[in-house]
Image (tube, rainbow, N blue to C red; front, side, top):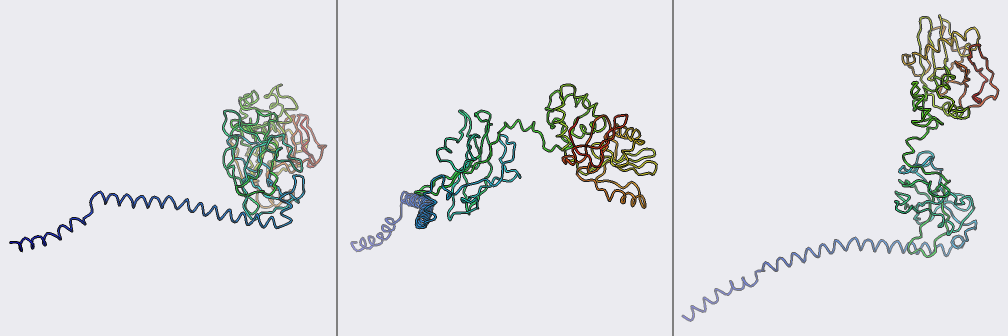
Amino acid sequence: MAAKRFFNGDEDQPNQKRMKTRPSFASVIREVVMVNFFENFCSALEPMLRRVVSEEVENGLRRRCMGSMQRSPSLKMIQHAPPSANTSLRLAFVKMLSLPIFTGTKIVDADGGPLQIVLLDHDGVPTSLPYPIKVEIVVVDGDFPANKDAWSGDEFTKSIVRERNGKRPLLAGELNITIRDGVCFVGDVDFTDNSSWIRSRKFRLAARVVPQHGQAQPLLIQEAVTEPFVVKDHRGELYKKHHPPALDDEVWRLEKIGKGGAFHQKLSSQGIKTVQDFLKLYVVDSSKLKGILGVGMSEKMWDVTLKHAKNCVMGTKVYRCHGTNYTLIFNPICQLIKAEISGQVYLQRDFKTMQMMNYFQSLVKDAYAKWNSLEELDGIPLLTQGEMVEQYRNEEHELVVRSSYLSESSFSVGDGDYSDNWGLLMDNTPNTCTSKTGISFFSESSSEGDIP
């Protein structure tokens, strides 16, 4: 019996050992938690280690560069040079700004591209440094004396314009940029407020070097400063005049004609809605156009408005008018540039003959009255074929209608003058021939001149 009990005891011993080595549920959970913690810890530690290593490498390179500059006599002289020394470096904007500037609108250069900043030496020659330079875009007062050869850091700092109380920062966008290899481009930057609230009523855009951490004594680099300019509210852009105006611009885009103002309303009531309408009526009957505007428009205002209108882009379109025995070719503002009457071709020099003035006047007025029904063509058409075409080419030396149709003499109906060569002053004393009916013709040597 005793031996049997001993055998049973040995048989149960392995089961007991297996039960003791089996892990509990709590230990399994504990191990899972520890593994997850270790993985999360490593994931969080990795970027921090990368950042620390990157900063140490950058600081090492910077110290090495600074050491080489301190060992270099020329760079050491630049580093310790006073503001008025000729050895200082400076930042500069490559191009002027595109004006006018409105709030909320991206600031670009005169060519419509992004602003470009370069690093120049004391001779104005582009240069570079062996390491990047951090640059900040700020606003300075329009009265800042940027025409001086040099200014102190305190002068520049005192001229920086901050936002008004309760307003957003004056500049928005990418204000901190980096110059590499001596050049950088400014990203999207715009104003959030106008410039009317400061004494000068103008701002200047400036770029200054930001001292970097770990750089004990940076190079003396003078700030870049633009020309002074006015910043207008964005709503003012809706009323902006176009320079030059386009033919299809609304007539209030012309100088001295305000949107919704008295002149605009008077012109609109008579069907003068675009710059093209304005110029067509001026060519056909300038006295009627001035009568529509009324006595409120002085002679000086009239000259300004007309000069602005005459700078419009003419394009290449011409208009053809057919009659019972004639075909007329007009430029976009109703100036007659060619006519065929009963098979006879008349060119611009023929319009000056007194015998044809009254007849041409009636044809032009008829064409103006039915302008919307004229045939629109791109470029000057050929009215005839064969020998007539050859004759036309010989007489006019292959006359080509370009952006301005007034390269030769022009034709004007009414009591006003109309000049040729818009924007080109060839002769201050126009040679005119005026008929009894008030038609004025300018010879080929005439110039723009002043409007009487």
